[in-house]
Length: 171
Image 1 (cartoon, rainbow, N blue to C red):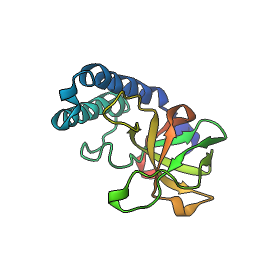
Image 2 (image 1 turned 90 degrees about the vertical axis):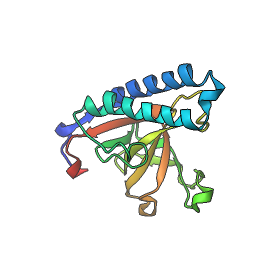
Image 3 (image 1 turned 180 degrees about the vertical axis):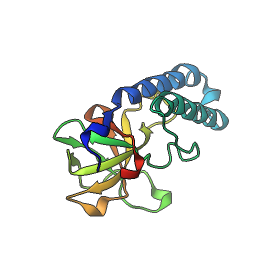
Image 4 (image 1 turned 135 degrees about the vertical axis):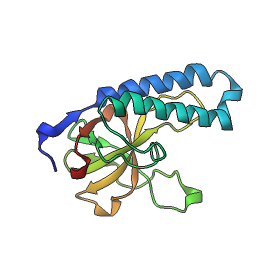
């Protein structure tokens, strides 16, 4: 792990992206029913990737493969609790056809006891008004519950901060 001098709170950079992307969806795509279907949803996802690459990655002088963006954990963006203990929802293992159950019995994480990498923002309904209320993360370490490592979790954005570790080799 790096010393704290090489860590940087970039929550405001993520919030800038969050507000920009949801504004584009909510004002340009959502009002037109045609834009809430197949091809146009894909176009919005492409726009969101360009925005993230420009607003977040370029600002921090980092690269991440576009095809992995919003699908795989980004090793240099760590989502941490903003207070000593916060609520979260952890996805339970099921078959791919049953994905989407965030019902693991563990409902809290403590600061310093867990490492989570950012994957994406999340809302329950992806074709309604977007708020990007949650960070979708991958659990990389969980001291008290090692069986949860590798699982995804949802954390409300106001309960967490995003920390940038500039050297991904130590992440």
